[in-house]
Length: 86
Image (cartoon, rainbow, N blue to C red; front, side, top):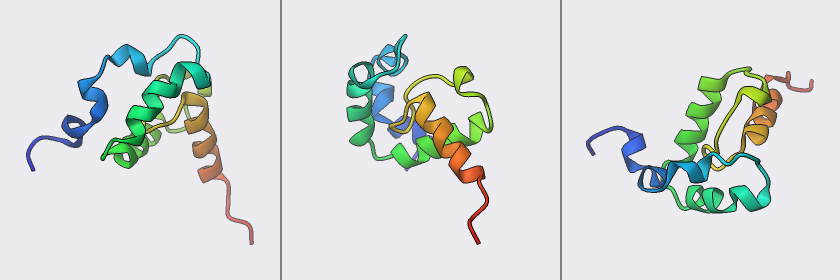
């Protein structure tokens, strides 16, 4: 396989504006999430988004990435930062 994983992403074959609506809600993200749901590199995309964003505030995150909205990725990041219950 040649190229990087982004070359395999279905979003690379789609209008990028679909993944960055002005408002994030079920109606405005449905099509982007459907595309992500069929993408073979969705998990890799999500992990890269989480790594790039780190502890960035939710207001500073953008786009549907790895099938998640900025708010969803922020929640995942916060959950991962919580220590495991003993």
